[in-house]
Length: 480
Image (cartoon, rainbow, N blue to C red; front, side):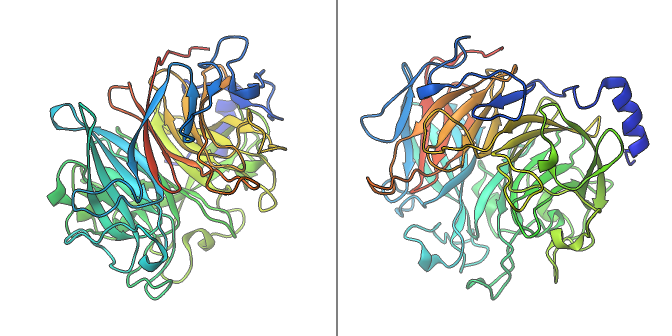
């Protein structure tokens, strides 16, 4: 059933669309130049604001990896080129999207994407081609499964190999991981022997279930970023990180009679269910061509869904199959996380390729109301090398202590930062691993931010060279 513009306009008049907020995170903003009226602290030097939000200033790390607040500590779980898999090969590089699962005997299982694109010869540490787990032997990416046991014992093995540009992804309500290929390379391009740009399911518990990898073609072939699954309806929502033109948000509706479960997705026909792209309109019923046009926290759009003509993009990229006015676009649609009865969706930044400029948006889609609400809006950061400002949100998770935890993928200094329900932001960590030079320092993005199932440990990755970190400390609930 489509939500018509008339329906949305009538609902907006009742609820005050553009002001009403969905979900528990509330209106969020951050300095500098946040395009919102919500008051925020400047967080100069990474300290907590005058209201006591956050954990205090970040303390420089003598090891030169991760600055954390006083009382917090970290442990290196995997390190590309240093730690090894059970099979003896080095941990692959370029860590990206990650999720945690309860493992046997008190262990925590993590599935870790490795964002490696193109031929294997391009990378010092590609994902090993483990027998039976390879989709395309020419491709360098994939996932590893990491088991962290009590007593700090760590084991790691390949979950899937021979995939490309495994960026984000998402966990499923039935306990598996969906890894997403952020590429549109077809067989014969960049050395590939098979088409890429698909979603694959990886089971962290059952290694046998991962044998003979099969893409879930029903979810489409495009530059996938992240995916979430509505635990009630079973519908999947997927982001696309692409440009020329900007990418889309998609929804996949399962076919009649289908029931989700471990390994069920690989049984679907290539054209199973319905894949659609989103189309937004404001409270006046006007079509919204690009999400960057929103300049106020609390902006609410109604959402319709438009069928994708050719989900496998046999001749034309999916996002290029729509003409102007058919769908809404957004620059760098990145991380997603399910929580509060809907999904949080990141648009990392917008520049000349978009109608408006910003340094990050986080939206909340409410499937019941079929509305999209702007929760976070970061103004363009004039000085990314200056510590204290946040920009370029990417991977995201809902915190068990309230609000959100967001990984930065911007210019200059890179942080993990939190955002409270009332809109205050605070630093959690800063990447201090300089992969550039003393004269021209460079700091890799954070990725894969996710809490352990018991909420005691925050896992996060430094993408280059590829380091998985476990952060512990005096976590507290942030209510303001």
